[in-house]
Image (cartoon, rainbow, N blue to C red):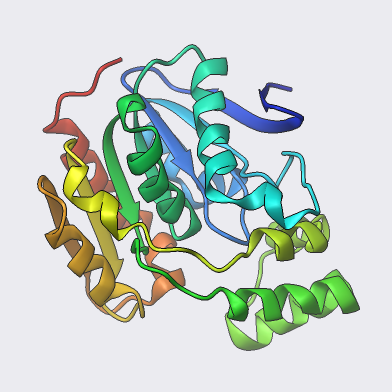
Length: 254
């Protein structure tokens, strides 16, 4: 299995497709497998060399239980470590929700490694993650089946594949990873590469994502009508065409 190393932490990644490199960073409660399950990989790999990674604390990457391991700096370094391990000097970045937040951090802390950013369902402003921690503590204290039951009551039914992935969660690590997020607003005016921000109209972050796009010199914002946060990423039929058009019209360095 391919792993990149950032100090003592191993980050699992996969590479698929050919063309200008595009790194995909998943959201909380997911892993790189979610991109495949939703159909993003099959479509985007036609035009891009995809670098898919499991964020620390998720999937097959290492899962420290110390909250200090989930500060932004090591998480940006994880992304850079994947680029280095894959032999990629510069890539476009596509992240959703947690992945979008880490994308803003990459724009601030490792801008030279990225040719463009696609940031979905996220903004760069300070926010509490107590809601996510409350959910994850159910799994930590009562087990995966209790977490699955909660998800199906409050969100939607889960597929057998999704349930099996949740049974493998390290809930203690994921609680540690769900830290309150500090503001990255000061980085916006300095972002010089093209950026695409998008969010569902019914997503509670929609207004702040649109505000962030207005603060980036070379950014555009796309609203997706009628969609909540979770529904947005589950609609690759709507998201992928927007992303492909955006990436096709900018200069990507392979």
